[in-house]
Image 1 (cartoon, rainbow, N blue to C red):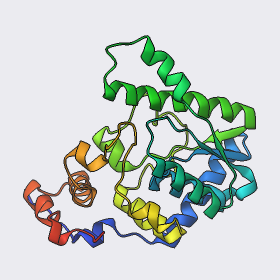
Image 2 (image 1 turned 90 degrees about the vertical axis):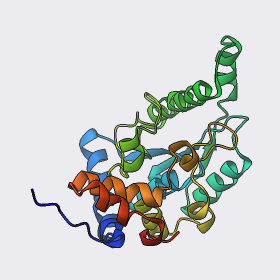
Image 3 (image 1 turned 120 degrees about the vertical axis):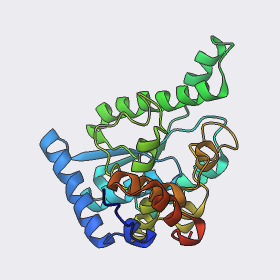
Image 4 (image 1 turned 30 degrees about the horizontal axis):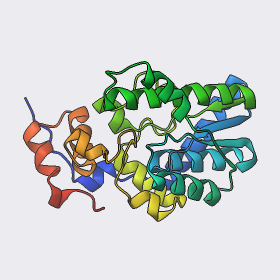
Length: 244
């Protein structure tokens, strides 16, 4: 059997970013149109995925037809709030803040064995309750913010961040989201900070996953394309990965 030889990491992960923006903005417009919506709703966390989704929505629809929500818990990082407001201001969208602490803590008070991991999932699902209620209130379609890396790893909460019906970043790896964010003008402070779900204090994505995104994305792409294990891991070594 012939073993495929893998291309360099840059060839795997780099895309034509203006073309990607054009495709995704048309995708958002078309998805809203056939579903009967004129407005979109984005839960902005202060992270790069939601910031990039918001930027695309504004390009597709105009800032006046995009609603943004910030849904903190009392354990959320103060940096998340700072960056959520920075992103909303950058793209000209008003940001509505709804504190989910009372919702989550009411359940936690009834659940003495609630672990930090389970509580994080409760937070994610509480956010979706608010997101879909506000969707009905505004007549705006919720946009998901998840990326391909998270989906392939299963690094998301069922009936939480996987719930929105339209997910513009769903076919982009995390490293590609970073590149797209830079192209769209997402603030550097948001693009460069360590990714985190911000569900548990001190949590980071890469610590949870046990691998850097820069390495994981090349491996995942090579597996999907049928390259050998040895070739995939060789090209995913740190010295060959995209910088960042």
